[in-house]
Length: 481
Image (tube, rainbow, N blue to C red):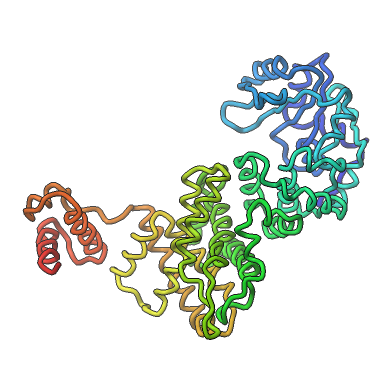
């Protein structure tokens, strides 16, 4: 961590942040302070594009004035609390303005979540205020609540504490951790989308494992995401060396390992995979961050499906039930359908490739069947299976070095096929369905759908090359039915 400045340095640093001079000129005469994450990032020497302001009086008129001065747009953030946002038209920066929640700036800072975010710099003059010792906490990498009611005032701060651990590598100090554990039964109180936003930031941060460990430490897996908390102490069979919780965290770690060395796992297609994982998916998550989230939830139904007979442990059906539980949880978190479906598909399909390893080398029809079944998450779920296999280090044959090596080689090949499928789409039909139906003398319906599915597989496998061959192949297929 870079050296955190003292109060005498913080003011000048803050005044040099982008757009501060224009904002200060626009708000001349209005008591206002830079606060929160903006001051924290300035103190840490990080790039600052977003400014947070606390000011005396309603923020509406100042927000509109800033929008006019900076050619941005202004809108109200909340009807419950006086807060407005100004942002540029290309989403490159924003300025948030909120009315003081107390009579003084010191009183306002005391009502904030953590001391590291309770430092202020006066906009007119640059005087820095740190009444709660936030700068020493920044220097120490310490997350400390501003007061004993911090979490009860807003239970979302429980998730925020864990997210800060993941983002900055800080630690939650002991007394604050105790306050958090005591308040954790209320972790589900905030609106689902607010908790989801924090979870997405946490899982996409530089050290999500530390953030997840913090969630576990303060009880969030018991009260907010019980699907993960329930994985503790669920014993697995000889394929695994850890309980389901430990295995899950190793799978998340496996995804991070893959990300850090894509060439080792995806070969010459590594650059394409890297670009693919950087793409936005939904709800503020890139595909890479969503894949990490999928790793966290992929085995979430193992506790409900565990059975043991003659010393053999089974989790039959955990893939399908897991998809259902994920859909339910992310509906409660008010996620988009796109993210919920993505995560459910990862759970639903994460076992398929492992069962195909014994059939290597695969023929083109087997490859088609996998891609067709796992579309549109073929690349993602293939990478998940690699992390899953690397985290299964038990004594059974499936965990042998040869099985692991074979799985990794098959996954490397399949990622290439999946990239081609993603870029070019599934095999195109040689003739439209109505023309095919006329040529075969059948009516549109389920039978025609089965024929077209067969023709797609046949084309992918190189068994047909034009419309005439497609019709002949379809006739043979119908006769064999």
